[in-house]
Amino acid sequence: MKKNILAVLGFCLVLPVFSQQADVITDILEREHATYIDFAYLIASEMGMECTPFEAYTWCDRYEVFGFRESPLTPITVSTFSKFMMVSYNLKGGIMWSVFRNSRYAWKELKNSGFWKAGADPSQKMSGRDLVRAIGRFFTMYPDARLKSPERREMETGRIEALLGVQEDSL
Image 1 (cartoon, one colour):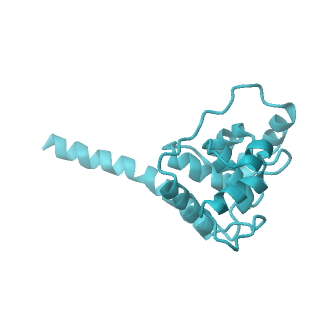
Image 2 (tube, one colour):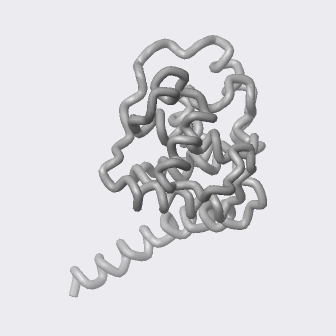
């Protein structure tokens, strides 16, 4: 009897945690333009991290893929998504990707692999629904992809100031 009561109490205590995460994902799905912070939250959630969207953004910013002077509220584009996935998951590419490692060639590599449709525009801003679909498609196409550890080095002063300039409450 005590086990059943404890199980019900445990379930009641854990339920609000899952509903908060569902609320954040529902908000992301409804956005017309998903932002870097939304993208970072979805990546962190896929990793099993329990964090706020801002904490997820600061964690993903260590990969230094997001624009140096851009706000976390900047809408994410198809090419930025492609570069983050290619760099962070250490995907191999062709000669141009290996030499330049910029977002245009990351987008081309994913397009040539069949990830993006033939008419996809690299500068297109992704909606929340598009972002969730793209992340799901990525892990379907690359089931063995594992997030690499970012290099451990001191963050540039400008990056620190840019992060500190955004208040978590405003997000």
